[in-house]
Length: 392
Image 1 (cartoon, rainbow, N blue to C red):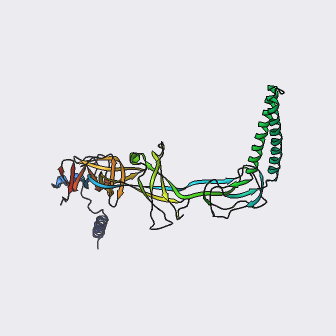
Image 2 (cartoon, one colour):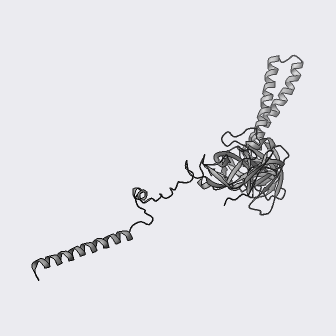
């Protein structure tokens, strides 16, 4: 074979190899190309093709409306109730203490005992007090006798006015000393200031107690005072004699009935609430001071603006709803009142007939465009009723 023929065959083989390699590389690139990636816009236009649709994020200016479900705020007749948490307090409560520093000589009560007013609870060492009273009483008797004789001499003009006045002053001073000594003796006997039940004993016979040291406690629990707070929006309804019902976790199923006794004269400027005190009869002694009770008060029937509970949005202690109007929504702060299953009373921030969003709130923002997929409105004076109108 000639040299020129070999060169031609070699060139042909190299060319075929290059073409095959290029074809293989193009095939591999096509396999790994992103799906749906079309030709450049210029190529499409040249080929006479129309460009594909452009997606716009929902809810943004110029985008499509967000589908939502709305329900109208309606006025209903409700049994208005107020629920609060309160603390039980004794009708009368005191710490039994001593006025003087002295030794305990006798303890006359048992822990948990019911005692009567004036009953002796503790006796202290009274020897020194009785001795002081005896000395003062003797001085009083002497001055009384002298005063009697001086009056007779004064009537006969034997004593002057100054002398009789000095004798009278001594007599009065001795009377005061006797009263003071008797008071100190009385302080050695500690009595119950009112009828009630004593608590735990904190002293023993022979103990040296100081003034103000607690010996025991005494509580009159025949009536329990229940203090609880209510918001200032219902202060006008809080009146003496209003019936209340209280429950405790300590007595499941048991309801304690009572009445409102008084309402505090001041509203707390921080919590905007007022303290109400109710009186609960407690003849069986089940309720104890310090217990935590749930209180319910009924204010009777009243017209109330009601919306579904699922429309509420909670944020940092405030309550909001989205109100739909003219194809847009507005985020509005409201004040709620009584709750019941599935619905809640609106006290302020909403008017009857306004449409609140119940479904689709997660995608909404203030001023977003919406389309109502349920809830066409039928207006009837002040009330708007929502009915189903699903879009296909």
